[in-house]
Length: 120
Image (tube, rainbow, N blue to C red; front, side):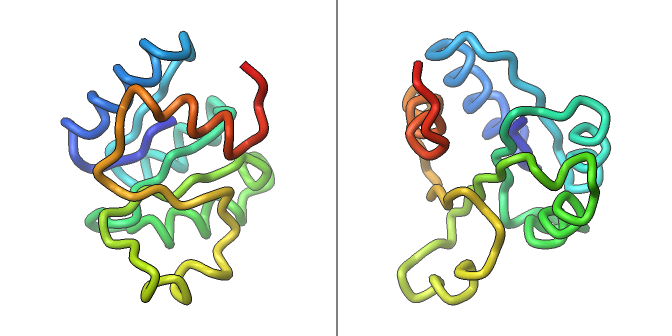
């Protein structure tokens, strides 16, 4: 599942993942939609944008990890703001990894496999 408030980012990431992996990709445009969709569909992985209006990535992550239905789903944070100086902000978050924007859409599936140790 790709969670991002920007429609273009969702579309490009979805296309890149589907073309390079054949995986089915769910999308959500807000934190609340992500929590609802993840609870209903239980995706294998969630790519979660940090910077979103209303409910940001941190709050969305907290809700996902507090829900017994979604707490075990690996989450990869995606942010345009990550720099070494920001490392403290992200250190204790229960995430599989942090990816920086801009990303290469056709490499996303490969990055996800590598992060999670999935063999193609």
